Amino acid sequence: MMDDTIDQVLDVVAGLGPEIAAGLWSHRGAAVAEDHPTGDEAIDADVWADALLVDRLSTIEGVGQLASEEREEPVDVGDGLSITIDPLDGSSNVATNNLCGTIVGIFDGQLPAGGEDIAGAAYVLFGPITTMVVAVEDTVTELALGRSGSQTLQRDVTLPAEPVVYGFGGKDPDWTPAFASFADEIRDELKLRYGGAMVGDVNQILHHGGMFAYPALRERPEGKLRLQFEGIPMGYIIEAAGGRASTGVGPMLEAAPTDLHQRTPVYLGNTELIDRLEVALE
Ligand code: AHG
Ligand code: MN
Ligand code: MN
Image 1: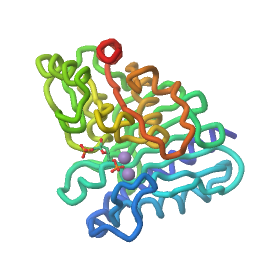
Image 2: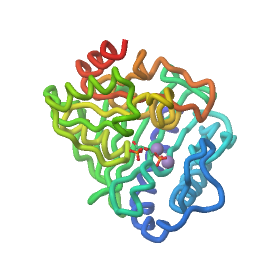
Image 3: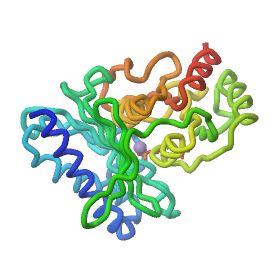
Image 4: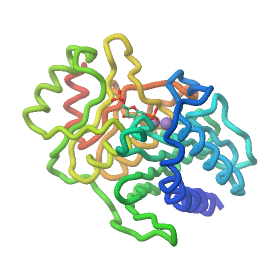
């Protein structure tokens, strides 16, 4: 039953991918009246993608709570698994036609819920092709999504052993001294790839190996990304692919949110890099 529900959630998200990709151009416009619950600016596309996802996901039997980065509170739609969505991650990239995507977490428990309760996660990436990366039962699969169905691109996706790229968010002067000196080391070892959408930047890490971070900042120790909607689902995917995800002080999947919209520093990628980062931040 639970597996059925997970499959249905993933099917709905896969089905919506090409639809969202095709419609984004007409929703790239100005900010609407309401901003994110976290105070970030929302654009038309955020709200449009949110409505589509919530509408379709709420019809699945076996889904209980449905929470979106765009909504203050979870919506109760029945009994069963809890779903979290970041309907459009990297939405500020829509204006410049750069990468953005959708992040989904599936939890066997009431929200807010931590890594202990996660039953699956996925992200859709709107790029030159629309792809979806799914993690269930510690196995990661990459699919290409088309209007008439999906095709598996890669099964058992794992991070390449040799890290190649890095992408760190925020401005250097805002970084803490410990993170800044760690970043200096990494700059000498890896190649910079940063696009300003977590989905796109993490997808580079998944394919090339390396490290993504949106770190704690001097004036904002909690960082920018959201634990429930971004940190835990993306962390789960990277760990299922053989990497590590950390809040800087410990495993991302052990950091249970107490507030649905709380933020967290995010560091993820090849295990040895994340281990080193944790030591550098001690
Ligand atoms: P969202 O569009 O869902 O609010 O998320 C944006 C996030 C994330 O995708 C990305 O890693 C980060 O913001 C980029 O921030 P900067 O523009 O500060 O680099
Ligand atoms: Mn996001
Ligand atoms: Mn978003």
